Length: 174
Image (cartoon, rainbow, N blue to C red; front, top):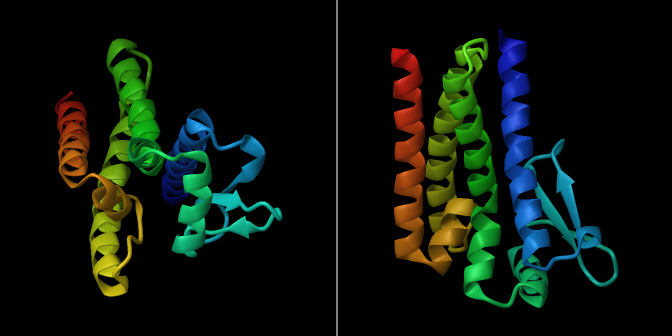
């Protein structure tokens, strides 16, 4: 069971980072300027500067400069930052609809997946807020999105969390 949960967690993380990658590509960052890093902490999309040097989100100012080069609008930058959660949510919602619609599709993996996302996202939110207040810089997706569009980000994440809670409760009762 533990191995199964680790695999699910890896798939959730991979879909999240793929969401950032796809959003960046859609918004204008060339594919060859992005690399998904899954096996080092933190998992993230590394951006390459003009010299081909990979820049981590931990180097916030340099990372932001590269993004601004390809995504000049605040709305686009917000979509890049939230792209991980948007794509991850689309995947889980699709699996949930499939699980509900097809009798032979197992419900337990969907419930575990939704529970893992809720748990890790809530923990991530708390750490993001604490670290961002300490560093006086955004340290994650939540704080980065909030820095750009506070009201819209608040509404988005209320809907995001409430939807996962609803999906979890719905599948728990079935």
